[in-house]
Image (cartoon, rainbow, N blue to C red):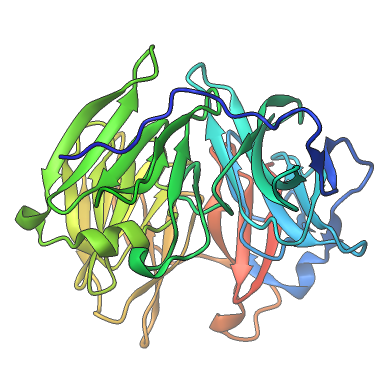
Length: 385
């Protein structure tokens, strides 16, 4: 296997470089708008602590009970807000509208970070993209700004240059170490090896023959965790490198594309393939359960119990997950399953219910019970009780 180009240095913005604009994370007196729970329908008891509207344009990310989301502000800047489980806005940051995308990560010693991009004017370029890490709760700058090859790509701390025809969907990618901001790997035009993503500080890459996991040692050099032959599992290296999905499966599992719009779920540290062809996968932090939806069954892997599986129709779709319940929609019925043991449930709903499709269901729940609930493109925030 030809290694990726490894960079054991931190490239900070040179003296004299100037930020294009915006602001770093700063405390704010803003509050989230209250939603009248009588006007929506949601699982009974879920909205006992109230329902709030965070105003995010896209689904947020969450780590250690703090959500971060983005929206276009009235001033024309892209606004990033961090919200804790009680619904309090911890900080607000502004970035140029082109700086979409951000990442949440944890350092080796467990410190949660928010990594935001920005544009910096340098003597060589009008606008050079950079990445800076801030403490997720306080907004304190931890490292950076680091010059990156282009906008945020993901999964994890992966950034990509503008598309180049011979490389498919993206240009050259780099991956950063969450603890330091060091560049742990950079793609090189002289090798077919490509970065797939960064997960919990581990670099996942793929070449023509293998899917490889590596982790930096104390000196910053990459050490191999595992290597899987693509041919054994029927995987395609181009599909894996260009179509990696950002699905939060907690700290122990990752997903890669495995062909025909399917996903392979792998254990991060061991490289064990849990399932090769899943239609969907999700993870519930409250019950510590991994859920996999296959063509004909739903499978649950609770951390503190026996795995379970139940048949579902081929048109089944995972609609919601949270509070220890999986919500599955089919053309004929809406189903609910207890995540701990797979028991079929008949959930109760509160509020105004016009039809089943008007229900707000949890799509992400923290370990403490705060949740994002969603109906179509509309999402609300439910604080923990």
